[in-house]
Image (tube, rainbow, N blue to C red; front, side, top):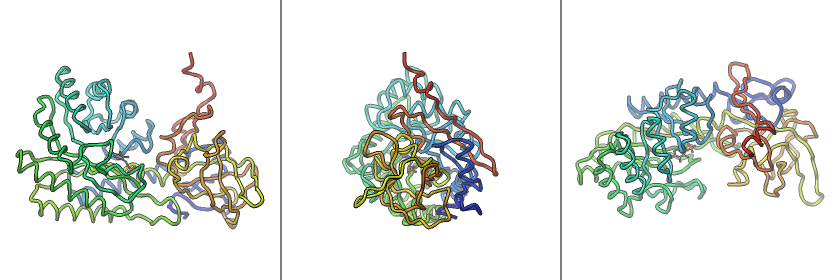
Length: 432
Ligand SMILES: *Cc1c(COP(=O)(O)O)cnc(C)c1O
């Protein structure tokens, strides 16, 4: 096993993904290619579902955050596993709908939903709209009234927590484009306004403190603040929230330096804290929803590339160039995210070649990893970047007019194309 049960090395010295030889997969499907071990995704969905039922209560469920990975087949899988889904755009809702995902199980997020987005969500029959601010609240109330609908809503609240994570992925701070802050009194006023909206039914509150969080502490702090807020609201207005949605954010092990995460134990600890805090604040225990994205799909996915040029600059460094890069994985360019990279063709050899893995774009910042070591590759070797199941395909672009790679699902020892490779003609399909 390398980092996660999905990855291993076979007798040929090749990397295996879900038991299949990565070098053979690269030959069969071409590179770059995204692989996804869907048995591992299902196992993670079940772990979340069962742990929620056991530690948060019967009605509590996880919602898969589609922004981490979004294509029709994945929504079918998530529906089969009985999860809810969190969508952040009409495009994600449309994808879920096209896959037959039950619309009533969707939470619709976003800090700037347009009137058209809101109409689309109401026409589609999404279960809950998570309202981000006053302008949206009043727009939704008006549009719902015009359409003769009575949508269920949650309000996005900012608890004011810095989860000690990367600035760009921490959203629970008071200074945030998301939600309404408790600290400024705006959240309190927001609730009163929502209760006064004739066409809307307030079901509860939502918060999201950040992403790639290894500790349960930021979630416990968020619960404490949210439950105390709920107690104040009840004292002030008599309104008792039924749903508390705590967002996503559990961390994932990307490299040997990251800790292994026991998700079940995190949920158990959070569950007992919620019980304790409900008793302390004197509030009835709400239905608890969380929205894991990364921690459901990241570990189950990897990307295979083919090594092209290997260039060593004396006194500086060595560059290993691959046939993909920032168009299929912009995370290093955006956040200097760290990855485990292997020479999949020689995975059992000593990883003693220190190098920078560079993409193929005309952009110096197009890198995947710096200062990592792998078995020295030569032209034609298969290079694997592990743990790319989240925020890779979903963040992919066409920069440099590079077609997006396919998504190949691996299950029960078989491989199946779930999203086909784009062609050059696809790139020109919208050009008039
Ligand atoms: C990003 C996000 C998630 C998912 O976060 P992960 O870190 O992928 O678990 C869930 N809910 C909201 C509102 C988000 O913005």
